[in-house]
Figure 1 (cartoon, rainbow, N blue to C red):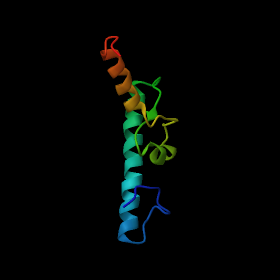
Figure 2: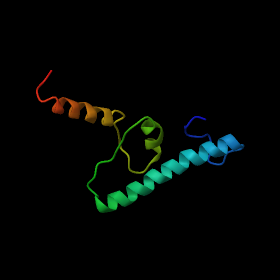
Figure 3: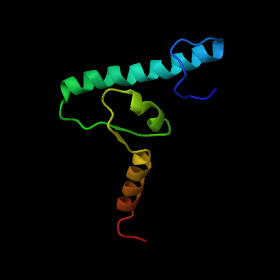
Length: 87
């Protein structure tokens, strides 16, 4: 089953209902966590990362930036720094 925005909130069959529940449940989870995080750190910049960032982030209240390769970029930077000048 694909994780994608469903055609409607209330599915008309089991697969549509499951897809809607997964999609909107995840959007609600992200928004709930970010609501609480931004209460503690209102100046925080929020960026979505990973494979589903482009699917989920347009439907959230707080995500304004998408950086799908942020984790890999960070690991690459750490690897280069840990090489200690070796090539």
